[in-house]
Length: 90
Image 1 (tube, rainbow, N blue to C red):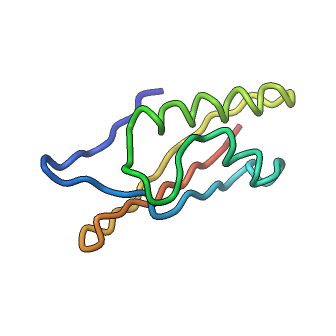
Image 2: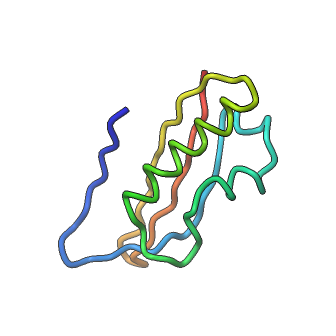
């Protein structure tokens, strides 16, 4: 899966929120967030998003589920924040 992230030169976005949808309901939110090293308030990083996708896939694979993860990003330019939503699907 290719991850495309739009970056505006000179502007850094801080993580506002991290949510999970789709098959993510099969696991505890604590386990999902632990699989992602993305924390509220830190500067958003594409490598962390990529790592989160990989870790979520591995977490579900351990449970016998073959899934793919689709990230969505919602930007708030005025507040310089970004919210991530990870959709876990079969």
